[in-house]
Image 1 (tube, helix red, strand yellow):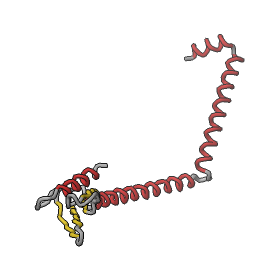
Image 2 (cartoon, one colour):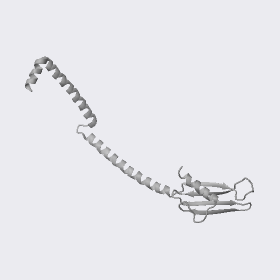
Image 3 (cartoon, rainbow, N blue to C red):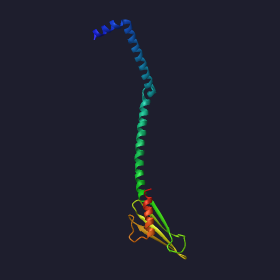
Image 4 (cartoon, rainbow, N blue to C red):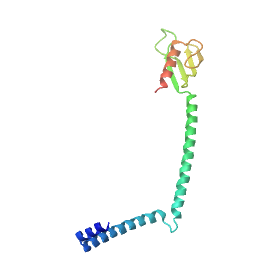
Length: 164
């Protein structure tokens, strides 16, 4: 190593080599000053307790956020369960049960169903002097009794409305 240093001194000259060393020292001093300023800005205290307090606050905030995330996930799961068992699909079909009695369609069949296909169909038949109302239970998109053409169409509309 000494031979190489002596060769470098001989090549550059002692004065140039001294200037290079001083320049390197100057760069290191500036770099050290910048790092010192950054450290003081982070700690802002003689004993460094500020950064410890800051890290403790971040840790507490992170724990609070994690607890909140768990609560939100639980609530979303509860809401999803409740939504699956609530009425989500509806369909209505208007019709005239008595052919040749005019263009009005006073009667209707309305289906109300959940995502699983459970619910009911409410049907009305309007005659001149009376109104009849019928309700049929629906389980898994089916009824134990036979559905009328209008009730079947209302159930199909309700089933299709689940996917929109």
